[in-house]
Amino acid sequence: MEILFYLGCFAAGVLLTWILITANGKSRYNKMLEDAEKEAKVIKKNKELEAKEHLLRLESEFEKKSAERNARFHSSESKLKQREVLLNQKQEELHRKMSEAENTRENLNNQLAVIDKRRQEMEKLHQQEVLHLESIAGLSAKEARERLVESLKDEAKTQAASYINEIMEEAKMTANKEAQRIVIRSIQRLATETAIENAVTVFHIESDEIKGRIIGREGRNIRALESATGIEIIVDDTPEAIILSGFDPVRREVARLALHQLVLDGRIHPARIEEVVGKVRKQVEEEIVETGKRTTIDMGVHGLHPELVRMIGKMKYRSSYGQNLLQHACETANLCAIMAAELGLNPKKARRAGLLHDIGKVPDDEPELPHAILGMKVCEKYKEKPDICNAIGAHHDEVEMQSLIAPIVQVCDAISGARPGARREVVEAYIKRLNDLEQLAMSYSGVVKTYAIQAGRELRVIVGADKITDKDTENLSSEIARKIQDEMTYPGQVKITVIRETRAVSYAK
Image 1 (cartoon, rainbow, N blue to C red):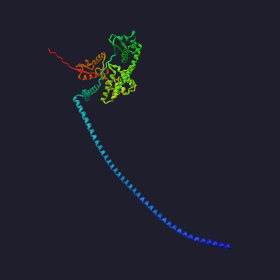
Image 2 (image 1 turned 45 degrees about the horizontal axis):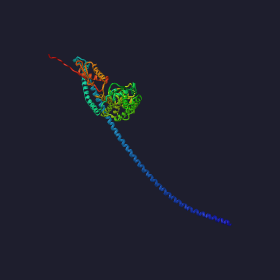
Image 3 (image 1 turned 180 degrees about the horizontal axis):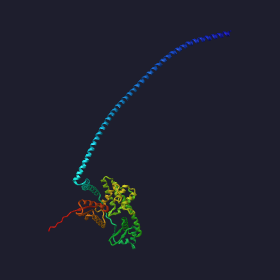
Image 4 (image 1 turned 135 degrees about the vertical axis):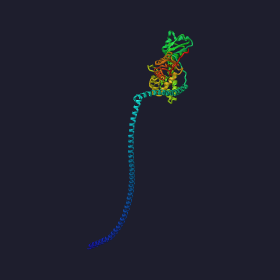
């Protein structure tokens, strides 16, 4: 019972406790519910406010963008309206110009029609006038035209000949004056002595007793000398002199120096002769190289191949028409440099070409080629520049000139070789050249007499007054000059003077 009592009390307590808890929970729940409702209302109100603000902001942004878009639309619309106005104006102007062009075309057509009509009328009048003139003159238009052309042709020939003569005279005056100035200045700045050489060398001795020692027993010494040097040694009655004869100046120089050393030494026999000749030959070769080097340095020509330098040194022992070849080459080189400087060209190239222009006269072998062509080939072999090689090959017109240096080398070579005292000619060749000049002029019809004067520098041609007119004399002089240039070789220039005169002779008795 007690247990049941206690259980009942416990159940009553639990029930009472549950009732109390339930009552308190409902009150708390109601309070929390009220607080939640209030908070929800506040949040809802805030959210509504935020939503309204966001909506207002969106509306303002939309209105702003709409206003900007409308402004752009209005601007584009105004531009389109302006373009439309301009297009309308241009279209109106185009229509106006087209109408003006149509009017102009109509006017031109009308004018062309009037011109055609007038041209037809003029042609009719011209034909009538031609028929009238033909009836008066008794000639057809074709015949009158031919006669007029012939008369005009003759008149034009006469005027052209006089005009050509005036131009040629004026050109000769100016060109000759300028050329003479350049040539005279060049020659004044360069004047060298000319050495005249022969094919023999005279070796002087102190007494004729030495001749016997040179000849030797049964002539063995002189034979050894001749075989060692390649020079003919002439021992004759000439007092205190022995003649060395040979075409090669280098060999003659070797023989002269060898004889000089042998005579000074006193020991003259075949073995000694061969030894001395060998030493002298080496000395001459060294002197040739040294001469070439010294010449190139003095002339200011650098960068030459050693073989070309040696050939320049060999020029010292060669001569051309009695003129020393090395002096001629140096003189030509200096003239080329001076003339090139006067004409505004490169003086160094001109001097180089002038120094090498006769290099073909001193080759080690003797091929059958003109010296200008041979010199050009030698310089091409040793890598000289093409304009230098062309100037060397063209200074006697054997190849075509391809640079301005070539005519300068040709002219300066002629100046150096043709000046008085520079060269000498064999008398027979000189006389033959003068006779050829006279015979060439005599081959023309109408020539009565010819005279070559001033050592062949001037040719005077006398023609018959009844055979050639004054106009024909000018043509005759030009033709003779051209033929002399084409067919003859001569130094300098030849002046051709044609003389036509009429003589009246009467006798008083």
